[in-house]
Length: 65
Length: 258
Image (tube, each protein chain N blue to C red):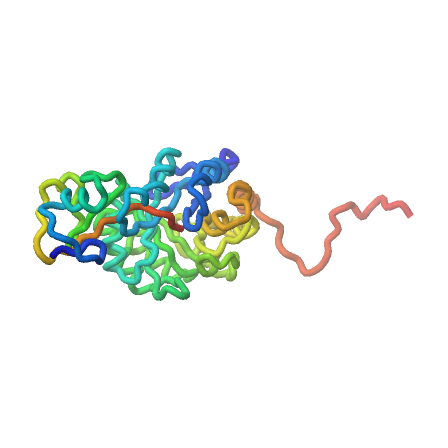
């Protein structure tokens, strides 16, 4: 089981797979990803493997002051 | 107007204006373009939040289409750990080393947590960020943040979103006197005179969000703040007359018709 943005989600082989499933795009613009508290650079999304218990954050820029 | 006042320089980079604009509270993305045109801000702040839909990227797309320079913030972070991770995510998402560092002590007052803020600032400087911390109007903490390597300090005029203006002008002037880096008045601006006062106190720039985004006419307020910031800066440089307790005639006293 993987946790993405606080929700339990099904297995995904890589960060890119997870993004494809969650956002419908494996390389979404303006998005950043952290796995277990460490940022995974965009260039590594396709190869970065996800494992049971990983905690993933997927973020973008929104309104802010 | 901006040609009337010298450029604001932060971390060695000349910025195009002395007004920084926050986007928080903007009622419609369609307002982005006219508000930016009216404000001509040097930097535009955004927050970093979890996303589950590509539709969340609408604001970012509009800002990037307008060609503005983005300044991500760490708003909502309650600890140095959260703020550092948020800053790292912002750097990856937006491709900028600059961060408006916010670490608040609680979600009600939204007042900076001095201990966590300083901790986060030290760590982010170590990691190569250009750190602009949102801080209290405390000259001692401002000095500590600069000693930690912050490129500017952003003292609050009054609580975030309050529109109460600069509640303690003496403290803002003391912050100005305590540090050599740019001072950006952040939080509390409600209208143009608040921004002008901050600049007259010696602030180098003003950040406004709520004042614009929740005004009845955000475009008009954006323009008003742009003019106020320049007017205040000019007045600061002009050297105001000392305050006097008694009247002093400005017209000649000789040659009076009797």
